[in-house]
Amino acid sequence: MKAKVYVTLKNGVLDPQGKAIGHALGSLGFAGVEDVRQGKYLEITLAETDPAKAREAVEKMCAQLLANTVIENFRVEI
Amino acid sequence: MKAKVYVTLKNGVLDPQGKAIGHALGSLGFAGVEDVRQGKYLEITLAETDPAKAREAVEKMCAQLLANTVIENFRVEI
Image (tube, rainbow over all chains, first blue to last red; front, top):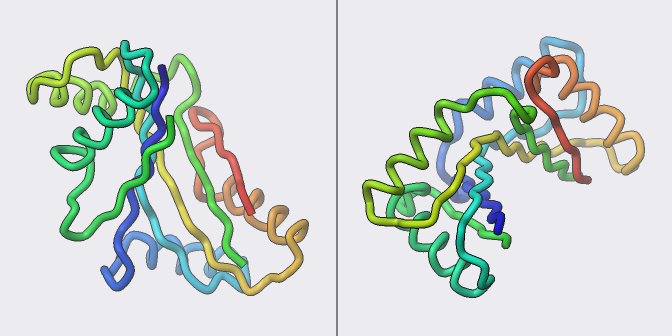
């Protein structure tokens, strides 16, 4: 079973990497880019076959390792 | 208008970062993690209001800057 995890910075947390990408896009001639926020995307292949249990396990993984919940949000899709 | 971009490594391209995450999850006691692949997730806020034009612009940005199309795939959601 495959789980998809999206980790994003919370609103209000500065994102220098996103800002740098935004500036780089501007330098390349892309007008109209107002903001860029960079996050992480993870695909986790699990042996678990029950969707509810898989989601629970992945949410635990996020809270413990994959996301820094002080400054980041995460979303899990099974 | 907000565009979401997912950049993932192509199949067959080694992903040491994903491997490291998989090992770390194993060390933390999460059993049954078969594979982890790490990608990037970007949220781009655009001034453009036409979805078709916005998609076209973001796909150009991916090809030119956001993804290395030799080893990475990208997917755009508007």
